[in-house]
Image (spheres, rainbow, N blue to C red):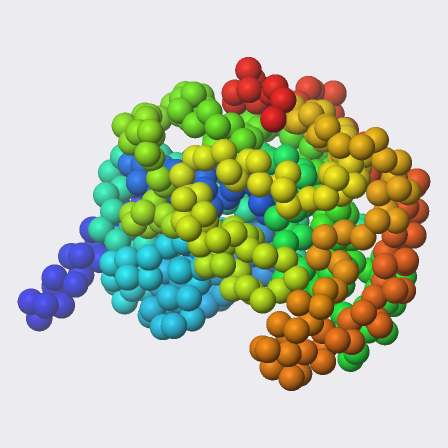
Length: 476
């Protein structure tokens, strides 16, 4: 009986603390619209801030919720509870740390042995969410973060913000039809005074990173094998581009459409969007964070001014992540070579390497192609064209891209891995020619139709919100 009373008292304490949080929390919603502008970096920077509660292991909450439940702001409690525990990224916090969970935490640069009382997290979360048959989407999110705080021993007495990093696109939206940006409307319904941040990075760096990861992940530039060749070719002919098809075609289209969507949202008059460049965080960390802190009206953390500062992941030093890091994408036998692990291990804190890496990862004609396609966005964001030959679009397209052509060493490494992998690689040169030609014809057609034009134009007359560090808009 006494034990039961203690459990009841503890439950009441959590309910009261949770309700207090619900009454005062605002939201910082960071859009990393092409997926390589540093959402994990930003979460790590705020990981131990007493006024901002995020979770370095958790991403894409609003896009997942809108995909699962639509735009409803009140949800069935039992279904919502199951979704958070089993489908959202919170499963890596709440579920027992089996090898799948541990592998994910290692992949994003965290420490799998970080102390988390996972049964307590689940118990507190279920108690808060299942207390009623329905729950507001806003309260569901706060319950998840509060349960995480309890399970990690985090003090929430000073917490004023949730920090959520998300994508601008929804999984069921097609890249060629554009993206709605509905997750901003969902977030505004929950937090009318939210603080939205547009995380940006040089388009050339974002393309190089995505291309590197997916060429290795899919096995070649077009994810093509003898079994799926016809289906892949049909998709290319009809512009049915997906993340697992033509790598370079998809990521160029995705970059244009996500930019178009985020600029439309940034031109809305009812939100105070701020733009945060990855390059400013890496090269001008302290002055940039001073402006971020002033905008949010929060304290500067003393460690942010440390010359050797490294972000943290759930309290443990962050080891970094990214497409070139073999810890993040374990494909070390693909067409493109990852960074040496020693280099990757020193790229967790603010540094110049991650801002300049694209220059050595892209061929001159690829850089020129990106300068042509993303000229508007680069000009708007303060990035200058690179000193490369003044190729025309056609001259750029007739040249092969890095990771596109097979090499003898790549084929040989496939046979060293397994006979089946070797045969798949040996067949790629025979499948490549139609993909090489058709992908370029389709891209040229899209360019002529204006697909890459007008991406920075909004629907309202308000100007784009100034950068957090306006004096840093100079050449990169």
